[in-house]
Image (cartoon, rainbow, N blue to C red; front, side, top):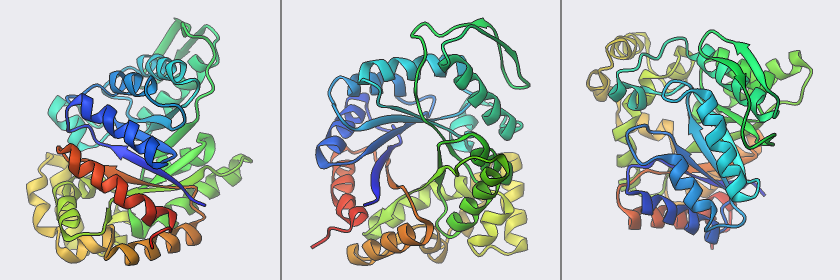
Length: 324
């Protein structure tokens, strides 16, 4: 049976983040990932607290190499790994407009930021003293205080270079655009084959919009997704050349308002799993079979705890195919 995960975007108070992790474990979820949103509750403080209140669920982050030095990330994840008894997972991504924009950080050379971040994580988690010079970050006689760590590394991304890197080095690959999942996995698998290693476990992350309200909630973030997507993904969503140029211009100026008119009802349905609960269940099953997915992860991004609790409770039987 496909594994199930919750991806928390911590727009809520930190006690609510911890409460969501605890509830996800009690419901039977396998993974809980928390997004590194920078100016919102600190993910490592929240995961450290959650580690002490859970026993089984794997605890992870969705983080980038821009807002923290990767050595600090390595130490933070190792701390969570210690507190949880070895349940940490690291997901590395480039960082999007919603995260980097408020800090006035330029999303420069995202592939290199991801690649150097993963190199630092791997070197420090070896437990050895390391000096290393990268283009995005470096180490000088650095050694992790907690010693060697066995922490899986996943990559979330949409660009061809990042997907190729996932095939070369990652244990897991998270895809986030429904019509592009197959193409993204294929790029990673080709790269893994060239590298002579197993392909990363494929996963899908998105909202399961089993109500009109949930679908409408996705509208708030889709403009940012479009601005952070390569042309292959934009075409998979049905955007024509004129619309792609609008998205690219908006990305250069970090102006999602120029993209908002493109987020139509049709585009929302194409981007996400939508429909009645039974229709969503069938679509999840189709995707799992078609792409041999290891896991399906759903977003919890409301500022209201009760709404998030309802979403994760109602989504689990959809993912697991156990609706009555």
